[in-house]
Amino acid sequence: MTRNIPATEWHPARWQGKEAQQQPTYPDQAELDRTVAALSKLPPIVTSWEVDALKSHIARAQRGEAFVLQGGDCAETFDECTSENIVAKLKILLQMSLVLLYGLKKPIVRVGRMAGQYAKPRSADTETRDGTTLPSFRGDLVNRSAFTEADRVPEPQLILRGYERAALTLNFVRSLVDGGFADLHHPEYWDLDWVGHSPMADEYRGIVESISGSLDFMETILGRELHHAQRADIYAAHEGLHLLYEQAQTRYLERRGRWYNLTTHFPWIGMRTAQLDGAHVEYFRGIANPMGIKIGPGMTREWLQELIRVLNPNNEPGRLTLIHRFGARSVEQHLPEMIAAVRETGSPVLWVCDPMHGNTESTADGVKTRRFDNVVAELESAFRVHAEQGSYLGGVHLELTGEDVTECTGGARGLTDNDLARAYKSTVDPRLNYEQAMEVAMRIAGLRRG
Ligand code: PEP
Ligand code: CO
Image (cartoon, rainbow, N blue to C red; front, side, top):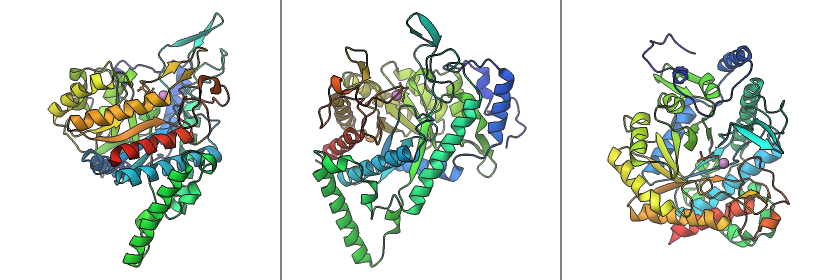
């Protein structure tokens, strides 16, 4: 698994010599060490073949030949690791990818924020309620969300519980996909409630019929079934935040001569942990996975260029995805400079727009929400700026759910601040519900059609 490593060479624990942001402080070091050792012996969640396949899909998207749909919860929770939830998420991703395929006329690469999205960065280390201050909730991988002293203590065992749920989630997704659930010949398998009563239902059905018609036509001409259409791959992604979790499942593969993070296909570095001299960048530079870097208003030209040099020194295609999240109001101001800065490095990158994290706001009652119009406005601006700069926006990164929650306002059903209390389930950021998510997909498909 691990080998004898010369002190100067990169290895999965080398980040421990650097300053690591956003890591929990565990009271029991011995138990933590035992847990990490146990996790490092368990089988991987993904394989290097899958990781490399995703990298080649991303390389295609970098060349403008594919589009990447990334989506899922802000934070997965252990409680929501259920059959219904996983199926609903898979359904909405498949439905959206069908709409995008139809509108963009390009293969869609599906990447779930799932099977490991259990650790969250926090802007403050503590939270105060009614005069009581406790450590912040850092995601189910670390501690518990209930506001008691005992619940907020970081517990090493949760690392293993998270690994197990990630594996259960991906195992179920793989079985569904292999069993025919993602077959383009049967889009009716993916129907969600909204299809029955939404203002967008007719449009969606029209798209489904059109694609089915095209498939029939092709198969009639070819005289055989298109096997390629029977299986839509779903890849897994999460923020590579909790470095002991990532480290424990990082393996050296002799036949490839490289280290792989095998907890997920696609880890990303969040805005709060992208310091050049920090532990996260040190960890990420040594793994072979394709990876994302989140870019917000605080990013500078020099910082971004140096990140690219450190993380992709050989300009490898498929390696880097830049996920920008500037907010509807400042995307036009910041994005052109970032595009120019990247061009100077010579590294291929995939540009993806996250129209969620720059558009978070609070209602008068202090409820965290996002306005549908801001989400769409940021996307529209991003497509326009990339086109003006001769660049290609090759993907979208969304916080969404396959359920009928009320966390973001607006959309075809015109949800208002007053609706939020009805079905607000997220413990962290507000997600698009299934209908709002589909509407975003339709807007992207429409935007790109003309
Ligand atoms: C997230 O993706 O949930 C997140 C915390 O994003 P960012 O690092 O861009 O704020
Ligand atoms: Co979030």
